[in-house]
Each structure stands twice: as structure tokens, then as C-alpha cells.
Image 1 (cartoon, rainbow, N blue to C red):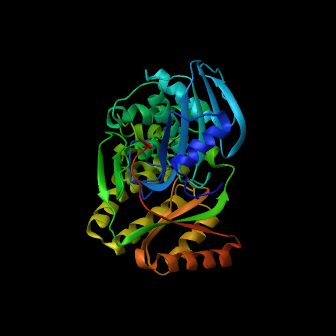
Image 2: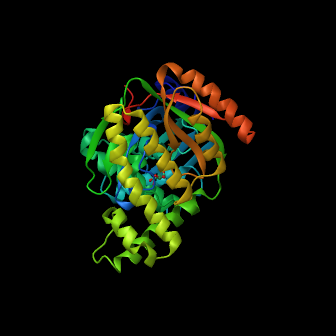
Image 3: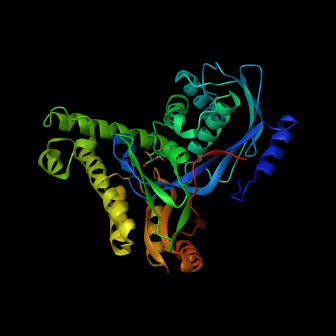
Length: 391
Ligand code: GLA
């Protein structure tokens, strides 16, 4: 796995090596960082992801038969899966087949195809390599099947098909933030998305800051099962609170006063999970306001509170993420930082003064090594636009 840039020509050459001949198209979908609004998407809440300049590429060619022939730079062999496959295979191809099935179920055009994939996004880093794979595959398959509608006309079908593919075929009960970021992102901005109304707003990122994504190098095996468990705990919180708040549908409808009043009536662990979600929803607009005015002390405090809440109330951080956050806070150029994505390993996201970014990266790497005896990888990333068919 390498994060070295992949060009359209590289993707075409990879396709030729796997299948012979030229692809009809190359689709590209970006990974993301989430600036804030963590574990809120599946609670109808607010999120603020930004697509980054690491992407997954899918080079594709239409086939007359209703099968997918799938190959990847990252995995050996060519896997052939009927479009009407009845069960997942338990490997990387499930993200693609799952998305294709979910697209068909939503009435989107899907045809047989040969697809070759390559990704710049480190897997298991919390940078949404899965969603990028789903959306690159989904967009490529749509175009190969002749659906030429502009992306805005099919955004939500594509987003929800990617999410459904992952939930139904891979078994990760994810929200739709990652897929939405890949489809709706704009370069230079973060995407403020209301996961209930699906309203969007673009929050420009101040030019004096860059994104520094610090990879802990760990991925906890329990990530998927613990993620699914958090979802169930949120559902339990809604059920428990609804006894006192009739008509309650999701944690989005709960404010801190309600939690103060009724939190003692429900299971204490479940109440802490709810407190994270409720307070995190309030932190998203606070972070947007700080970003709009370039109020770095305010943003720093909001990000720090988010990290503490994820660590203490939601319990999805780990010692490596905590050490990385502490190392970043002491490094030159640091403006604000926290863990990003689902947790249990992966990356932290930091906003760093552009002119000090190399010094920041060097200091964090040395400090993390001293604290955890592990090598950190620091990616200085630009924001990116939405998924595209490469010209
Ligand atoms: C993963 C999921 C998202 C979201 C985040 C946590 O990335 O795929 O839907 O829930 O975790 O914010």
C-alpha cells in the first residue's frame, strides 16, 4: 500500500495488466477527514467532513454479461461475481458488489463490468477508504451502464447505495457521512451536513491552515463490532429517554437540559453515550463559527472537548490516539486537533499553520515515537472536490 499519487494513465495501465485492452473510463473518489461531528451521523446529527487529496481509482469497461470481474492493485487475482450474487464473499470485493446490488435495488442502472482498483488512501486509517471504494465503483458502474445524469441529480442515490452496500453486504452498520463527503465535497471547504434534513453548507477553510493527518499505525480488531455496539447503545438511549420524552425519535431531539433531567433514569453507560452525541451536535456549529472567523483558540477548545468526549463518554479512543493528540498540541504550528473517524486507532486530524507544517510533522513524529515506541505517519493534505470521471 502506497500513498503515492495515481494518475489516469496508471489506472489504465493497471486495467490493461489485469484484463487486457483499454478501460472505457476511470472514476475517482476521495477519502475524507472529519473535522468534527463524530458518531453523530447515525443519530440524525451534524457532521463536518472534508474530502482530502488521497483517492481511490476505478478503471472500468462494460461487459455484455451480468457479472463483475474485479481486480485490485492491493490484492492478488481477478474475482468474478455475478451481479445477482446471493451472499458476500468476505473480502474486499464485497464493498463493490454490495454497492452494485444496492444501486440496482434503488432502481439505478447497473451493467456487468470489469473494474480495476487502486487507492492512495491507507486502509484502516479512518480516512474512509471503504466509502471511496464504494463511490468510485458506484459512479463508474453508473456511467458504464449509460446513466449520464449530472452528479447532483444522482448524489443521494449514490450515497445511500454505498451506505446500504456496506451495511447489508459487509456488515458495518455505518452512517452516510463518508459516502456523502465523497459525493458532495468541494475543494477548499468542509461540508457541513445535517444528517436529518440532508441540508448542506460549505465552510471555507482558512488559507493560513493546512490539514495534518497523523496516523497512529494501529487499527483495533474490534472496530466494527464496537461501532455496531455504539449504535445499539444510542438506540437504547432513545428508547430509555422516550419513556420521559414522548415522541422522541433520535438523539438529535435531545438537548443538554433534557439529558440533565432524565439521564439518571437510564443505564449510566448508555447515558454517557447519549451525552457525547448531544454535546457533539452542539460543538459542530461552534466549530463552524470559529472557522468562519479564524478564531483558533475557540476552535482548539472545541476540538479538545470533542476528543475528551469521544475518549471518556463514547469510549472510542485508544492510548495511541490520545498520545498523538497530546503530541500534536505541543508541536509548532498547532492550531486545533482531535481524533477523526470511527476511532479505536487510525488518525488524528489537525489544523496547522501552513508555514510551520513541516516542523509540526517532525515534532509530532519524534514525540509520538518517544511516547508510544511506534512510528507515526503524518500526511499534509489538501482538501479535494467530489468524485469524478477522470478526463
Ligand atoms: C465511520 C462511519 C461513519 C461515521 C464515523 C464516526 O467513519 O462510516 O458513518 O459514523 O465512523 O463519526
